[in-house]
Amino acid sequence: MINKKKVEEKIGIASEIATKYSLSNIKREMEYLANINRDYKINILMIGGFSVGKSALLNKLIGKEVLKENIKPETALATELHFSEKERIIANYFNGVRKEVDDINTIDIDKVRNLEYYLSSENLKCQPDYVFVDTPGFDSGIEKHNKALMQYVDRGTVFFLVVDCERGTISESALNFMNEVSNYSGDIAVILNKCDKKIEEEVIEIKEHIEELLLATCGREFPVIYTSIKDKDVDKKILELVKIFEPQYLYEKNMKALIDNKCIAICEALELLKEKKDFDLSDLDEEINRREDIKRRLLDQIEIQKKRMRTKIHSDVKEKIISSIQIQLVSNVHLLANAYKGGIETFQKQVIEIIRPILINEVENYSSIAYEDFVRNLSLESDNSNRFDDINDIVVSVYNKIKSIGESKNLLLTSDKDNELLEKGTGIYKSITSILAIAVTNINPIIELVIVFLPDIIKLLNVFTGSSKEQELMEAIQNRIIPQIVAKIRTELEYSLTQIEDVMVGNISTSIDEIIEVENEALENVKNKKSVALEEYEKYISEITEDIERLRR
Image 1: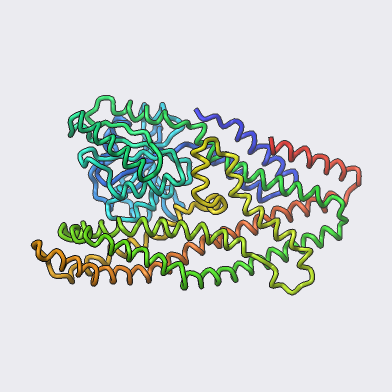
Image 2: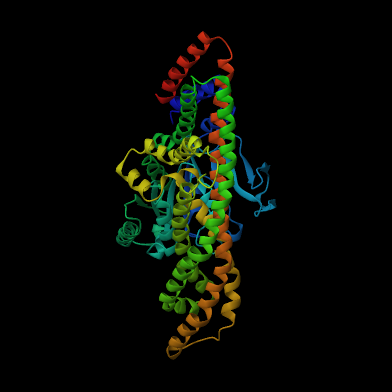
């Protein structure tokens, strides 16, 4: 069982201190985190291509045929499996509504984020720290399924990639997804399924081949097991795989980070109180007013930075991404020609497999750089006021506190592998909003656009057959199909990049507002205490030092 005692105690101390010093925002956040902590479990995501047997394996694990197998891709939803003596199904809607349902066939899947199955299962009961999640196939051609996966990326997740042994290898889309996820998490394992279709020697060869592919693609090794639903020990093998991942470590890596960041915010507010202990009441009033003025002007500066960033999109970022896509499509025209011969769906999948990793990687890189650049360029220098020197220290303080949100993650790193993961991207942005989640969410409309318009474009081509037509087919794809794909993406890409910026700007605005709000609450508290007897005030300052030490233990 996960030991939550230390985190519970830390939440209690932080909540008590926030109440003591009238830090109402922090107090509310601690109440929210207490609820999250109480119900916290590690998610084990069963991921993989469509029809690789994820649902069948989970049915074997829970000991009953609950999850539908071989269902249509467009009807698949992420499904969480929880233990309960009282069996029921809960649908979680995008609008925040949770509703018990009797028949999942009656729900509108376009409005449902995921499902929760509460089941009486001995194997679920003996894994109280985990929630198994059945996910849609991410190579089914329906990109919205990736959104289903992304909702779990930042929630303390272990990924079990299921691979169909019959195919003899791991698909390009699976490799791409593994490469994306491995940039942010090392908590990944592989289940080679349907091994009853091959002899033992072939299975071992395929296992070794997959291990080599993953090492070459992700730069690290992952645990790999092989089994099938006909294996009488399949449930035991899955549970043994679960044991590789230490729940206490995963819990502290994720939940403790949230608490530590809030404790840092409280400590900074208390340090501010100590710094202002010699201010008289009029000084404190002026300080509070100045900070409100700075907050207003920083938020105004955000609008200026937003326009600067948008100009950069037009002149640089968008065309760089478009150029990369065009180069890769042209470089792989022979693959596209072969895919074309297999029909529209095959051609469509090949196009998506080429452009999707480019979009993800480029948007990730752009998001990281843009975020740091955005924060770094926030400035009040354009203000002609002579007070600039007086307020510069507050501006620097706000910037450093935004930056420290990312740097505080270093407290959680316990291995060289973890440090490698942190170095793969900028700390600031990853701590506030997952780049991977934003990138995937905002390239989805582009991919969906490709899925919609490609069939119409392909129909305009004549049918090419025979070896003599091979070159003609490649030329038609290069000169007619690829330019149309690029033109469509160019239009959609600007909208997607703008959406990414809006999320980033919203996070920065919220961070600035919260930082200054907490500090102003602290200053108001100093002002109130200072209006009473001096002896009581000195005692109050002494208590601040003690409370900071309590939070830092």
